[in-house]
Image (cartoon, rainbow, N blue to C red; front, side):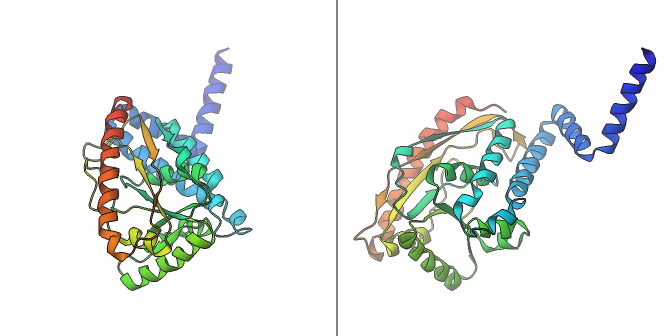
Length: 282
């Protein structure tokens, strides 16, 4: 019996020593138990890495229908499953406000790099939604190529003329292909309680294409504290608000439209964040 046990132990040790994946997994588990700071970095790293891998691995399949938003459907489901294992779940509200026949602009508040998983969750609801991101991400290879193949729109925020040209082309796609552009009007991510002032580019696109604006508000990530380096467990509540038509509006209406959407999304953000806080644990 003793020899049998010794043999089992030696076999397990050999498996462990020869498996880098198993070693990393054990290190992450042990580190998470010992340090909340380590848990924070480990969770972020694994979630972003796996989101990268699940989009990159199917690149050959994307080539059969490039630039198709639903190429990202299965990778998105996998990414949401992974983040759920880390204690983060999504609750979607307002699905009845989605009209897949309407192209337009979807506005979202921006909080963290893990918003990529939130976007993949929304794809299951909208089906015709593509994110608009900064051009620099295209050069993060091979992630940039995979993103291009699932329809992601890249703009050069440092080159206003170039960005406007890209958005003009997408305004045509909004009308022709009933596409919805997912845009973060704040322009950068943050974890404040107050949304940053909205940039007007997305509103110009909506008015130029005479399409709809659909505000989508995501509750504050109370489980994620970048300052204290904590990544706990929690629920993210996402509310899809009713469409705001822009038909008949002109450039002169953009400022008022921007202010209206900012106030609407801030009020909803406050309400959802207060509700979601009870489900979050650091």
